Image 1 (cartoon, rainbow, N blue to C red):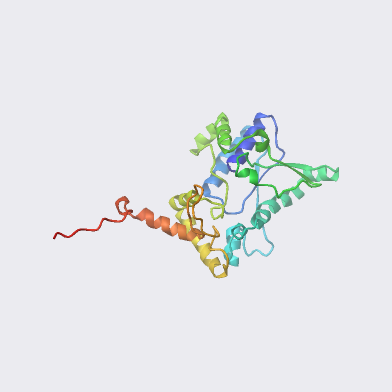
Image 2: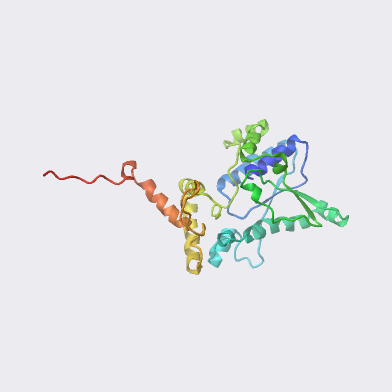
Length: 275
């Protein structure tokens, strides 16, 4: 339900390609804006253009101790695996729930029984950042993975332009009072969030910012090598913004800065006494 996936569906429609199944794996960590976009814009648009409805899948552990990725972390007093340099949360909370659904989907069952494969289209764009993604997925006897945005040469700005050129999508979004272009689809506590992403959360969802702090606080006694969700401090070389390894520390600093009047953000000049 992010920019790239929506643009991919827009491109498929223009090429006359109708998907057989549209899946979204919900980790329980999406911003409210993303969920609202899916329900109020994307699903009505899919119905209007004759595409299949959006199917939402979720990871459901048998033990029932948690049902979301956030609950997984707070229950076990840990952080998402990306904070430790791994990608297990994507496999567990996104890939596995989709594959479990597909295993019960009759068209896939028929294809596999006949020796065929399911062709899976994934919305990674042709920009330099997204070109590094998806390489852990390998074609298999059951799946063939396709990245159409890369084949079309669509980077993120091009994806935005293509979405804005779809008049029906624009009309539905306008009626819903939402932007036609969705926000980036990601967990609000994701270690890959930028400093601007975190500022947005603090400004618009202060309760979620508090839950980021709670997650890091619960995990902190077990942290040995990393400081928090952002792992280690970044000095800010090559044009990047410096930041601490702890997202909580950044949130606290940003909140202090917001509370200060603009005139007080710079050190005051020392007062001179008259001789």
